[in-house]
Image 1: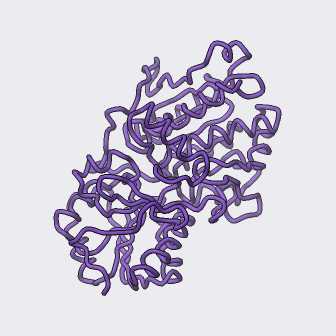
Image 2: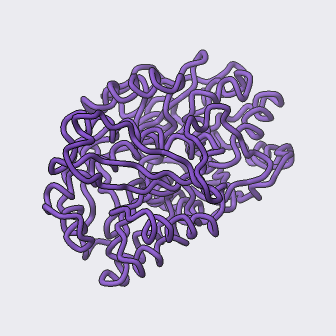
Length: 424
């Protein structure tokens, strides 16, 4: 979603099972092609650029690979197999741009799925326009990604936002807070605590707009450096305001504040966005300190948001030995969205693919996926709604991630550790 903080950079031991290709940052992420499919026609290549060394980033090519394999097993697209070409950007915008250029000029891909980091997505967007290369981010959140498409459609129309904008993350989190924190737990006040990054500026603006409407008065608004290693002063400041809950916006910090929150027995629940908490490794990484921590996400490993959610989750677990982080779900969905757009357009020509993508109406793992149109505020962003893509709230309970919202998909009730003080 934003810039990687050094203090909480997390390397996944199982980040890649692919062989490094010649050339810096390149990985052989080519989907396995059954012989019967391989012979059917020239492959349609889709580029993938991801932060392979991070928990969320590693899920991007893995989710995409499962989708490509499923599509190829059914005969590919227009009789042609899909082939993924994957690059590790090493959490660098510069390397991402180089990979994007190589994918377009040398690898001859027809579309690119790239990054969960907003700064990276924003760096790639002008190149998508310049090279007329359809580009979808499965995890970055900055409002500016789709705002640029809205403001200069003819130039930036090749970019699609395959994840929630920060605005809709704030809306989803606030909607869930109304149902869970206000209605069920009778909370009345909060402090917003977010890392200082591109994606959290509009997120916090959304929080400050939506949380009071949900019934939570905002007593303070704290932004901290992603390199923060000691959260004691921040927690002390929050405790001094005596809120019922702290609403978080954290993506590349996660382990450190969570562990310190539990060790210091901060009596205020953590609720909101904690992207690292959507990985099944988070319990182990925090040594169980994440009990009661919540995070907004797109899909849940324990709840059938759609008929595709649980089968994908099980396929991912079987193949990689862990549950997918949030952008594993969306990258899986975006491969299907691209494949269907190509079939709909009957072509891999860029402008025709844009038209095909704009007509998307796909039931994926995260919901019914449609993109906002040319005149909408968030052009080419995923449409938000309870019957479209509502988002989910996940909570760690006894070493497992549980769905606690939307209520119709919930597999558990919200609860917090004993050191947390709830309103009487």
